Image (tube, rainbow, N blue to C red):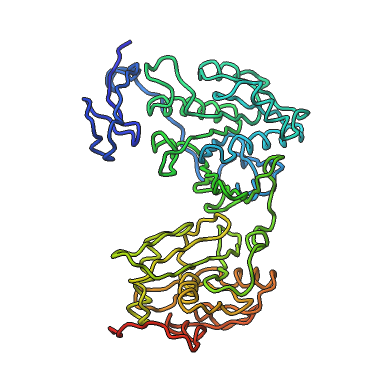
Length: 460
């Protein structure tokens, strides 16, 4: 069998015919490695005649693929109602964030239901997995354990008639195919090993979990095509200093994306947080300047969280801008709008912004809450008590409507908030008091006091 040699970038998967110190595709240095793979492609399309494939209508006789619940409510809801037979799920996250713990608890919950589940570890021995199971109190559950890295051996073991319904591979970067002459974790090995395991899952109608390492940028390591090959991509997020963990679906062929499940890390493993808004606001200290409650949406779930800001004088030529949990470019835009459209000088101030609880906010609906925090921190006047804020800010300073406003307000009412500052909402029944804004300049009326605010000359 002929062999081919390629030089492949381990950061982006780009292939070249010679080695180079820098990848021309992604710009990464010292990431190109020579990989030798067996050439299994036929010599041209004329080497053999392919068989005809059968086409069917959209409405066919095939029954809908059944779902079954994991038994962990946060995980089931985030997946869209449970696991789908024959699906492949890729889960990534920082080292030590709790990926292995979560999946061990998941297969244990499935074993408690009488379903056959297997946990295959390529990073730990069986004794080490048992040690974690003992700490979690799962030793009595019906889970099959194995320690293996050879994909050929794993497939041979799972091909039998008594194959498990759910299989966990921890992690895909440790798996290898013995007919590919490259190290485990390289782009070629990760792609080929994933393809063989996914084909097995589709053929045997089993659910396959693949644990993936992440790069320093937070992306799952290996070729980007890996995320296209699987049915669902999950990211396990969280800050090391916080107990909360967020399981987020960024791709889901059988459910909604951007759905989240919230867990709390304890000494007994991961515990579900059925109402995360109450926990994220549990340490809120009343009337404090520079803090506002934002009513956000994570998928279909409303989530209330506290956004904090600190504004201080700076002696530096370029004042610091530190952001945790929000897009720094979004903060720069809001600062520019406040200075240009409202006349509030911020360019000579240091600005620190934080989303409490280790959450990450990506929706533009947080703009108005961020602006309120900044003005509150600058004037040292607290945001009105028992008030939630949400709304998008445009470059001209207009406050734009955001989706699911009624759901956000209902969640706020449930948690005891009495009023809201939002864009102008369409007429209808509102669950709490509402103050609609057309322009961000109207937000200044909530922070009037005898304390002077340094204003710039209006430019528009």
